[in-house]
Length: 167
Image 1 (cartoon, helix red, strand yellow):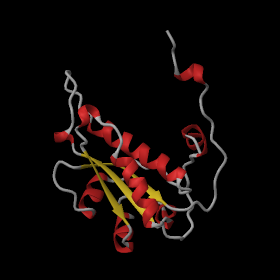
Image 2 (cartoon, rainbow, N blue to C red):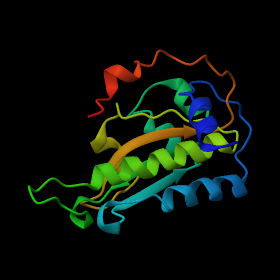
Image 3 (cartoon, rainbow, N blue to C red):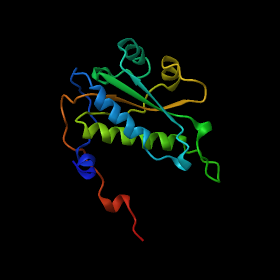
């Protein structure tokens, strides 16, 4: 597949097969996230890969949707704001760098025949506590990772004219 096919194929999946994710595939996906660009190459990111059923069960306190836990793996993308590049006006790029890495991870997962679903609607303090994240490390997004049970049709996307201005 080429990158355009991968982008078109990617979907937010909310149902997963119980099949485990092969370590080789997981390692390639994590490598894609590791290679993502970051502002001034600061790489203020950290990922927690969750396979442990006990930990997944605890995470239900932070995000209660049952479908989320049908995937064999859950990944938490974190940012480390104190290590990030800051623009001249003070804007911190930690969360942006973490989201770029997460996007690389999601596209790599699609290439591997796996599915994901970007989640940000979780209770941050609970995730920080359950994953024992150190002070200064912020969970930015969660995604399940596994083989899709169902693949929905593409959802509505705005036309180019609504999203881009070419001058």
